[in-house]
Length: 112
Length: 115
Image 1: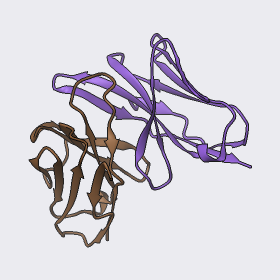
Image 2 (image 1 turned 120 degrees about the vertical axis):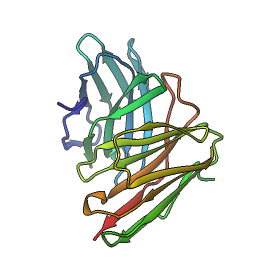
Image 3 (image 1 turned 90 degrees about the vertical axis):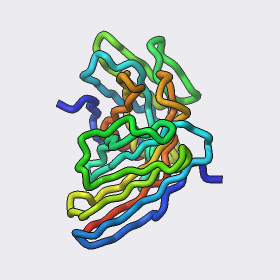
Image 4 (image 1 turned 60 degrees about the horizontal axis):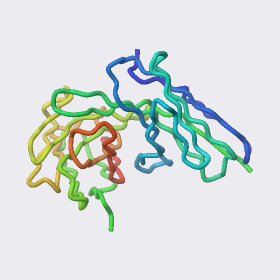
């Protein structure tokens, strides 16, 4: 079983739609959680950190459920420019520092 | 003003050759990483260095040898290239090793194709 699992998609949605991605992680020692965005043939970039209380950044809302080991990302009012792969990432504390573990990503395609 | 840069961007080579990929960051970060993203898009850490010291070596074949001449540079040398080494290699950096919300900044990637 992969440490971080995501539905690969693709999610094909019209502009203006609301779309939600889910992610589960298997290691209960995971400490920190993130969503990264990766455009086609580009590098990953941090979209947002995910906090236990839930957090929002404009049209993006992230939620964390530690009991269920589940992370979500909600995108409201989708734009064409939101088309990308969304990577769920967890951070584990190791003796030497933190290690990031990436999911394989969920593909989002927003169409006009 | 690229924060994390890598060269070359594309690398096509024959099996058995030796090649190097260079990475530089101008963010003043202490920690640098190499990741491999294979055809299934999984991004997996290979190595991390903190202030020129090797911290993480994730059971990577010893044909892969990272070298950090200073904390702004982390190069990756690969000996005796194999078909399975074909992937995109990303360099990344972060301020330091600790901190639960330590953002990592990625370079543009090097697409390696082994023929």
